[in-house]
Image (cartoon, rainbow, N blue to C red; front, side, top):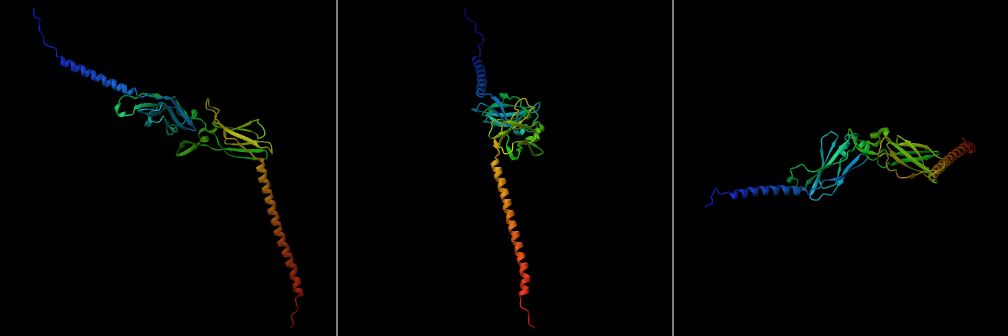
Amino acid sequence: MATPTGPSVSCPKAAVVRALLLGWVLVQVAGATGTTDVIVAYNLTWKSTNFKTILEWEPKPINYVYTVQISPRLGDWKNKCFHTTDTECDVTDEIMRNVKETYVARVLSYPADTALTAQEPPFTNSPPFTPYLDTNLGQPVIQSFEQVGTKLNVTVEAARTLVRVNGTFLRLRDVFGKDLNYTLYYWRASSTGKKKATTNTNEFLIDVDKGENYCFSVQAVIPSRRVNQKSPESLIDCTSQEKAVSRELFLIVGVVVFAVIVFVLVLSVSLYKCRKERAGPSGKENAPLNVA
């Protein structure tokens, strides 16, 4: 019995369809494989001192780049450090617009050839950051100090910040006002027992023992904060009564010497005038009479 014959199946067309489908799948897989080389940033950390603020993260990129975006709460994202291979970004100029605002940043990862990707890049968000509450206080600097008798006067340098108002850079005191305190730790140079004094200005005037040398350091404090309340302590300075006594003694000796010189000059002039006055009349009496 003869086998019935039907219309032949077009195998070449099916093969073409399968080949096209396989090619499309390979392209998608290749694209996905390319993106796996892009590593998402991690360990995002804010580094901020006196409002100078830098965002740091890891890892160092290989064959890909980063872009940083920052935004105030409920605000628009703004690009910073566009397509960088660095792992830090200075965002000071953004956060100083309003130091009491809360900011969030994110780090986006792109392939090195960003033209090859059209999809949303992977990214990592930073923890929130409020400059007024979170910036670290820098180490204070003692501008001047003087011990006179039983009084010690210490002035703390008014540190400048990068916060600007009407084009003028503000000092730390301008930003924090009375929220910013300074604590002075002081002790006799011959002792280890410390005392402390606090002020919400930049100056201290404390009572000390006359004739004793004192050492001291200063620390900035914001008592209203829950964290980051204190700065590192300043370098230690010490008074020197010996130098002060030497200066005073030198000044006294100088005044005495000057007074003696003036006295000698005045006395010499007076004696000269007296001799001249005495010599005048006797000279006239001893002169010969004119003969007519």
